[in-house]
Length: 412
Image (cartoon, rainbow, N blue to C red; front, side, top):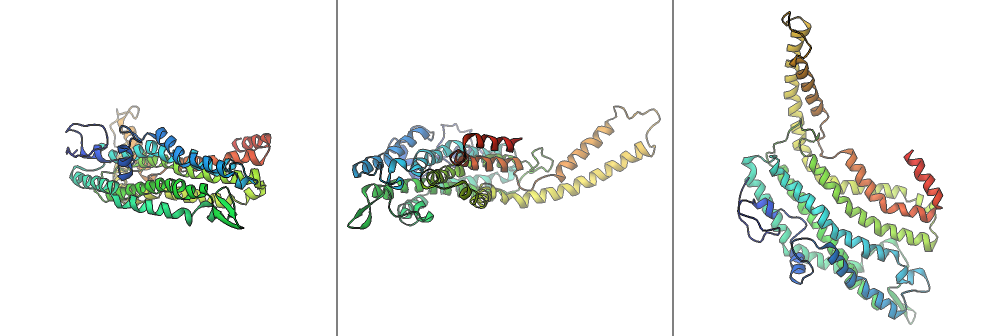
């Protein structure tokens, strides 16, 4: 392992024996926004300060909306759409969605960093490739600390609410608690102005910032996949020793869960106040299936980078182990079947039997090896986490006992 010094490390203080990779391979920390939040005291210490940032975000993004809608008479409007306190989507976005995005820095970030370091700690990166691995880490640091991406995200976040809001995309009516009618024309209210200029841009900035971190992680994996890796086709994880990547990517289900909370809140509003029926929900099933497929692709898609090296390792192992199994079994057959053993040698307790079984098991592991480091159980876990926000909708559409009977019939 390389031992190098580097200034500006984001983690705890380290001695010179700590490698550059261990101090700099962060995906959740760092960047201009992170440094600004540390400078003004929003983030204290080396941790993400999830609770502190969530409370401050609600204080900036949601509380002024409550004050303004109360002053404008839109806290409880004549219709549910015009009542701020009845807008379930706003609650989900500000009280669940963004705090979950902050929580990802304590869930997803450490998983990504641990998985990145495991390439080195588990000996998957060969000694002669350590310099290239260090270069990949340096690239992560440069991209993470760059000003340009976050400046672009800020500009996009400030512009997007006027063109790419959920209300525009779903075709909702123009009048709501964010609007006021003056001389027969619909205008943004003061609450609407705050919503479009402050609240939504903050949400979208942090979403885009995390999207950039995931792109940086994908670029890091691509760079590592080009190294001469020490992959073992006989590894017990069935993925050449890269099974830990699938485990790390399961943590990314927190993002579709957060999005699901916001979308489910919108559907819940329509069920509660606009008469959306169970039949209408059933018509959304194909859309949900397509959404799940998209989530799985985005969650585990970066791991497709390793298809080529894993496929090469598997094919080479099938060839070399196939020759070894053939030679071993021929010798076994000649000795124990054709009578090549000595007369006093018994098969009971013979190591030949164990070697036959062990070699056969190794070949079976190679044959069943996945060329993508993802297990079916991990796909299912992500799908379940993604669908969790939808379950409460059943209680809005069906009587409680009918929901219990439905769930019981599924698990039986």
